Amino acid sequence: MSDFKDNTSSEHIPVLIEQIAELLTLPQDAVIVDATVGHGGHSLRFGAKLGPRGTIIGLDVDEASLARAQFILNPLKCNVTLVRENFANLPQVLKEHNIDKVDLIFADLGFCSAQLNDPNRGFSFQQNMPLDMRLDSRIKTTAKDIVDTYDQKTLADLIYEYGEERASRRIARFIVDFRKNQQIMTTSQLANLVCKALNKIPSLANRIHPATKTFQALRIAVNDELACLERLLQFAPDYLKKNGHIAVISFHSLEDRLVKYNFRQNKLQQTYEILTKKPIIPTEEEISLNPRARSSKLRIAKRL
Ligand SMILES: C[S@@+](CC[C@H](N)C(=O)[O-])C[C@H]1O[C@@H](n2cnc3c(N)ncnc32)[C@H](O)[C@@H]1O
Image (cartoon, rainbow, N blue to C red; front, side, top):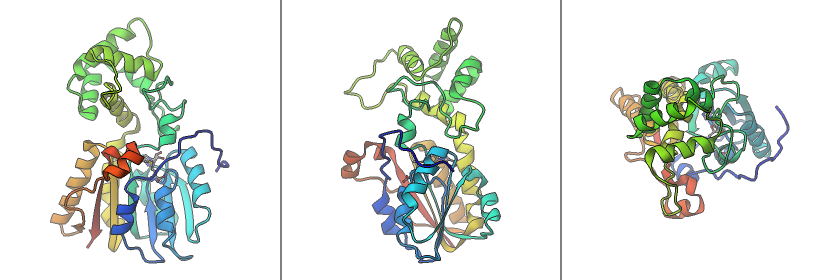
């Protein structure tokens, strides 16, 4: 793995960390899977409770995140193994490391602040960036490829399904009309187009940018985010020890719904006890310190 180089000023502040730490008790020799290790913020907190026989397996699809995590987690006493892999492939990773079952599977979904602000990643409509949106640079299809090539109906369905955007048909029509004359190369071009389609202008008074839902939809599609989450949720019970935990932080209702229904289904099958009857959300204080926490929801279940 490459050496950590801090080429962005975006420090990632881990969300809901106090609440998680309060709810989870981990034995000193726990085996922890951080499925989205990111900048290692949550893992650092988990790892501080582990002794030299404890283990953290940290996964991330993004090389830059892993480099940062390696730097941050270096002081820990426990074993730390970082792997560039999608959490949808966790079973293979565990097999390769001869691990049958673990004490905690943790996932903090979405992206880090550094990814959002990286001028090459194309996640932000606040800056002008190439329209990329891949968390994993090994993925072939970018957001630009999608807006360039999908037909109008498929685009509209995607923006509706993954963005829960009611004006998806109008946005798709604007995209297809625009691309007859010009390619949509950048995040600003797309954001402006969405604003035009919705006849809205971004304003400081309105915290939510009009293009938020369309950007969410494209990001989910590019990274196949919901299918990956479904896979993780489906196999998690097979890899948790008795009394082990699964904890998932989601950032929008599509993710949260998948977690909620999966936990309920496991409760019915008597494989999980749900520890969070309602999702845990950040305090006003946390939101004021870290606005990114605003939409976060934490659900935790215990393997029976
Ligand atoms: C919100 S950040 C995690 C931040 C981390 N908890 C911390 O405190 O630093 C999410 C990370 O998960 C990674 N990621 C998103 N989807 C993934 C997936 N399916 N498999 C592996 N990593 C993924 C992203 O690249 C990003 O680095």
